[in-house]
Structures are given as C-alpha cells and as structure tokens.
Amino acid sequence: MKIVLVCYSGSSASILRDRMLAWARANLVNAEVIVSSLAGLDYDKEDADIVLVGPQVRCALNNVRERVARNIPVMAVDTRDYGMAKGDRVMQDAMEEIKRYHEQMPK
Image (cartoon, rainbow, N blue to C red; front, side, top):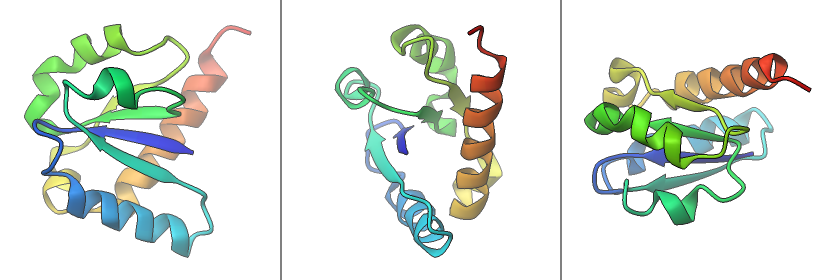
C-alpha cells in the first residue's frame, strides 16, 4: 500500500511517517509512506492508494482532490492525531478510508 502524506514543506511529517511505518511493520502491513509537499504532490501521487492531507495544508484539501485521480481517496488527517504523531490511528483511519472508498465507487 502506498500512502502519500502531504504537509506544508514536506518535512514536518517525518515523525508521523516513522510511527505509521512502525505500526505497519508490527501488524504485518506492507506499506510505503511518502511525505510530500503540495508542490511535490504531482510526482508523488503516482500509484498511491490514498493521499492524506496534514492540518497545515487542510485549506488546500479541495485542490488536492482535484489533482488526484478519482480512484484515489483523499482524506484530511485528524489534527490531534497528526500533532501527537499517532501513527497507529492514522494508519487505521487510512486503511478504513481506502476500504470504504472502494466499496462506494461504482463498478
């Protein structure tokens, strides 16, 4: 699973990314988490399973949705989970959103 985590400059999410990957390893989930800036999103979004938007760029959520293919869910990360680097909760929320999104998509 490829997750793109978008934040303002692409650097503030490294602790969250590390905790997300630690949870994934501990739960035998094959995951890649790419930290991206808004400017880097066009390159990083390729083959993504979900794009997560950090609180500092939440105002660009609609812009991100427009730039990402319709088959890729885009989700805002909970501000508290982001700030406290709750990688387990962010991963679980992302996995649930991927499942929910694909169940709702027309076949």
